[in-house]
Length: 186
Image 1 (cartoon, one colour):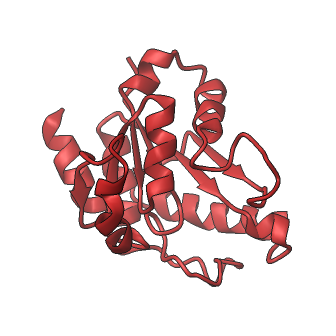
Image 2 (spheres, helix red, strand yellow; image 1 turned 120 degrees about the vertical axis):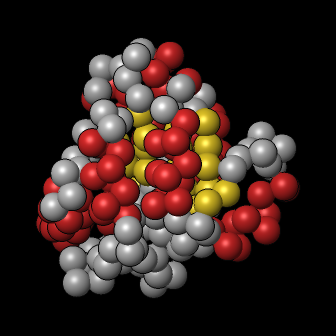
């Protein structure tokens, strides 16, 4: 069975901004996040990313800008032995009625298909995010869910009890703290 961790990007791997992360210069890693990806990979865990990127639809940045951000993210993780098995992103705006924008589970389905995983692996996977929509997408796909307090996480934590389907999700200070906990369970 594949051990899979699916990460939201903005607010989990890198600092978030209400004005969107629009360039590689604005993409700033959260301390310890690249190291955490490396530690997960060193333990034989498959790591993927599922991220809403409506800034594409809104014209805030180009596909080339997004590719450059993901290249930087991958390069930083690689410095610690980390690798993203797949990066899935939703390029749509909230009014586009797609099936991939979180809280819908489409990005997780894209990851499952790209990695050729059975649903049982998704059912044992973890979706880590800083917003309720990240956790709702994970829950809808069948994943375990966990919230981090980085990014929008502190505000999301206050609202966690409002959704019974994810209310019992464990909460961690950051991806590094989740990784410590997760690796201790293996």
